[in-house]
Each structure stands twice: as C-alpha cells, then as structure tokens.
Image (cartoon, chains in turn green, orange):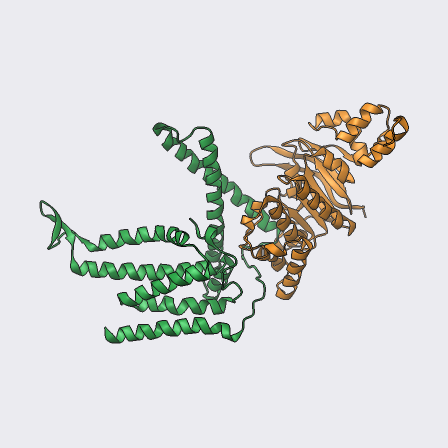
Length: 255
Length: 280
C-alpha cells in the first residue's frame, strides 16, 4: 500500500501552514536522533502512532499495512545485529560456528529497533499530513538542490503512474491466461516489467511535453491556498514538543 | 496582414524514424473560428498540433503566428506558449500536482510570479469549471470527466488566444463531452480561436466553422463543414465517414447543393417539412 493511496485530503491539520505543522515534527525528529533510551523511543513511537491514527483518520488495518514494509526491513536488520556467529550461548552449532544471541548485540538491536520505528512513525506522520508540494517547499527552505527536488516530485508521480500501469497490464495479462501455469509465470512477469517500463518511458516524454506547454522550466513550484492560523493553534504542537523535551531530559537524568 | 491566426508555409516534418508526418503544408488557420482537424490514424493530426505550440520544429518550411515567424529560442517559445494553450488527449499526462488547486496554479505561476494574481485566477477557474468541491483532492483520484475539466481549467486559466485540443471528448460520456464543447463555445464567443483534432465526424460537422481534412500529412480539403462534407469521394480517401445528417440529406435529396446542406436537426426538419405530409 502506497502513501498516496492513504493520504487523506481532509486530515485534521490540513488548514495549518507548513511552519505550524513542522513544530509537530522537527523537535521529535531531532530528539529521537539524539536519544539512546529505549523508553523515550518507545514513547515517541506510541505518541506518533496515536497521532497518525487520530489526525490522519486512518484505520488500524491501514496503519498496519503502512508499517508492514519498513517493519520487515527493520526486523531483518535487527536480527542480523542480534545474531552472532561466535555466541557463548548458541542455539545452533555446526563445526566451529556457534549461532546464537549475544546479549550485548541484543541490547544494540533493541535500541536500533525502537529508534528506527520511532523515526519511521515521525516520518510517516509527516508524509501523511503534508502534500508533496509542501515537502518540496520544506526542501527548498533547507536549501536542497533544485535537481533533487525535481527528481523527488517526478519520482513520486511516477511511482503512482507505474503502479497504475503495472496493475492494468497485469489484469490484461491474466485475461490472456498468463500466470495460469508454473511454466508461464516467470516469462509473463518478465514481460510485465518490460512493458511497464516501456510505457513509463513514453509517459515521461508526454509529461515533459505537457510541462513545456504550460511554460514549465523544471522548477516544480505550485501555489497553495493561503493558510492562516490562530495563535491557539500553536498550542498543541508546542505543548507536544515541550512534553517530549521534558521527558527526554528526565530520562537522560535517570540514565 | 492576413486574416489567419497561424500560417503554415511549405511545412514538412520528418520523424527521426524516417516517417514523413507532415508533407509540404501550406495553410492558414482563420482567426476566431472553431476549427476541426479530421483524419484517420496516422494522418499527422498530433504532429500538426504539436507544431502549433512549437514542441516540434518543422524539418522544412516555417509557421507564422499573426504574421510573425515562429522562433524556437527559449524566450520566444515562452511567449508563444503563453498565447497558445494546449489540452492533451490523455489527461494523466498533464496532471502533475498533488491537488487540483495546485495543478491549476502550476501554469499560472510559470506565467507570473505574483501569487495574489495566481490565487485569484485559480479561484476563478475553480468557480468557472465547477471544481470547488474537488480543490483539495488529488487529480489522479478523479474520474475521466473531472480530470478533463481540471486540465481544461488549468489551460484556460492562463487566458490563451488560441486553444488547441487533442481529441477533447475522447473517453468522455456524452454529458461530459457536451460540457467540454459548451466551454469551448463560450471561449469562441469571446473571440478565441479553437482548434480541435477529432475522429468524430458528427461532432466536427455540428460544432466546427472550419474543417481541415488531413491524409498522410497533406491537406485533402479544407473549408466550411458543408463544403468539406459535400465532397464524399475525398472523405472516403481520408478514411472518414459522412456525418449522419449529411448522409440522410444526400440520400433524400441527391441534388442538394453544399450550401443547402442542413447543419443541425432543426435545419434538417425545415428541409424535410415541405416534402412530408405529416407535421414535424
């Protein structure tokens, strides 16, 4: 499931300007990066899961689907850290290789797992509350080169276009009995990849023409509706950030 | 000064693959008219349209815009494209922004960096094309008819003098198709020149003031719809059929002159009235 399908244009922060929305994200992001506490990372993960659930109005199943892929990669990475080939307490031994968990590695793996998940939760919350053009504006503020911003927007659009094309081609293949036997699965999949990319190349040339026709110069600048906010709307992001900072300092004090 | 908005002088276009898409075209597109470009597949319609906005440069010959020769420098093309709007056949190729509002703002912001003016124009376009409810939606999530409307609003909000549409009603149901043509009619009433390419001879006959029939990159015939559709042999050569009204009129009145051909159902009824016993 891709983020674009989950993005809810009527989420609760939609009327807030980029500056206010970034108060929710940036402090949490920096604190998680600096943190070395399992408890703090766990707290940030929980807070941002709840925020995503309520602010973006996502169902639990959608939330689970969203986290599936990063979770898989993070778990694999953490297992690789935790498992040692020279373990003192192996659960599998063959010749001189003793495969097992090493307690010091397990501690690192736990920290990496929670910190990564906390970061992912903050990033997902950001992606689900910002449009691609807001992200592009944020990138411009951060002085990221125009080429990268252009690539970012085009890639974002092409992921959607590619998935849409691949789905249609897959259905067309199935209608002509592709994937019906073990023998034709792999060739059919190869053809699907080939056809998808060929079509994507054609589409990219068409998009380029369309951009030129509307005086596009490569800078993807979109104008959003003017957004104003009341001072009280600053209260919740500032409170959240202060709370996280306090917790971070308190936990650091006890460590 | 000619009365044409765009002129083709001995224009040919050869694709790198060796296909000659346009072959020595000499043509003047009349100003302020509704022009339909007809032709079978591979007749050169899309190449013709892309040359109008300077995307394709002729291999030989040249084009004029209000008697000024096309130049293909960056700034000249910018000026040209701000005067000639282009509506694509496939809406998905035109949609790039994450929301409808931002999609409408894209071309406008390229035209002027004045954000206040851009927002005013976007609001106008949202209102004029009935897109207010869709303003925060992703253009990719819309239906074919809504996407077409967004593309049209995005192009027309830039206020071009000439609007070029590649098959504007393709993949649209009759209702949405009529909405698009009504919008084009409104623009034409404001003096804009509208150029469309289409396969639909009935639509072209009923809607256009001027028709150009292309075959293998050459103009077979051009002129008023009655004049063009009176030449049945030429239309056959271009792999086109006669519009239903013309075919019926020809079968009932074989000696009917081209100027007397009915253009609408009402005109056909008027023509039939004297020969039928019943009241229509």
